[in-house]
Image (cartoon, rainbow, N blue to C red; front, side):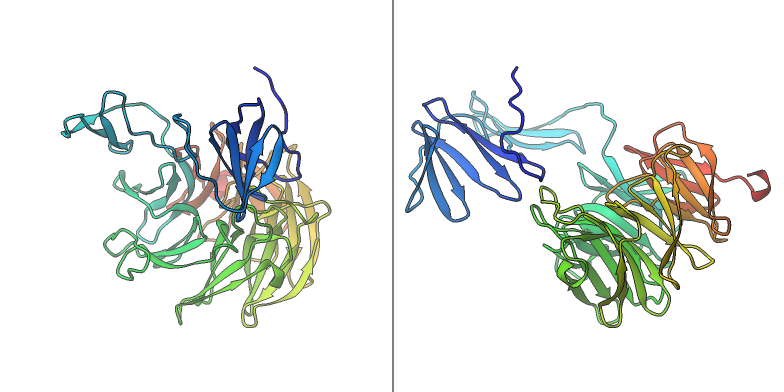
Length: 445
């Protein structure tokens, strides 16, 4: 095997999705998503399309074409990441592979359909996030396949259903459960007290109900917040493939209308990664310089900014931490200070009244890095206001007055993400597994 290194060096991640060869020994790659192209192979020559223009590629030379070529594809089995080759040499056809229910269906050469049971072992689909729903269950979503799960600790019962898309971010309220999903940055509203009706876009009778989406300004959500006044739901995230600069989706629960603010209206060439509600209709946002998948990083320093929800205008912004790339999660403590995590190992304290950094703690030596996922949920708060922080290697307690952390429990697994409180236990996940830890009484901590 020979490693040829980067085929096309750029300052964004490369996604070679096509590869072809001509009969002169030249190899051609289709690269995206920031600059994308599609390549096919025919009659000894390769052809590529960039935008609306077709090119003939032969002998290392590219020649523009006035129109699309007439192609006769070579008889090879190839395709995109969604390739599903169905035809067998003996004339049978593979109709479906159902890995969830462990069944395959094949039509034989005589046209007769056969469904067969299959079996396999796996760790299961990885969890995207979990939270406590209003019905006393722990709920969330998985990816590959995209599923909804619900665990009832009191009854020790599980529910597993097909989900609408990938549930990147979740936010429970006292009555409903909001979901911000990938792709297209969609927003769902689920009422746990009502019968489940599989989501269909455009059908208001579904539960979860599809509300809106924010593509291309948000494609991959990273945070979701129901503002405490009960009116607004805010979704944040990075933009579509190959793009730089993500927006905010603001859903008005009273009017059932949505507003999308672009990165040009917020922090140009950045996206919003974390949210924290401030008094008087204001929202503290933490940015990331990360672009959409396959996009180009164009900013150098992440920032905090305050958004006025009445005017949708940025009232203040500042890069309070030197060299910060991403403000990953934030929470407002009972004393009004905002605690947050930047770049996984930088716990910071921010005073929203003074709009100033109060303190920064590097957690790497004593606690390691915080949990990190597309929807982080690193902070967990109990009904009394006590704040806990999830790190990969354990669960810590935050003292807002002393502005200090104390490790309470080393985890036997790597904590992947969070996280919520239910009936005296903190729930979190690692990979495809749900775990909980019973928090000891205050006098025993």
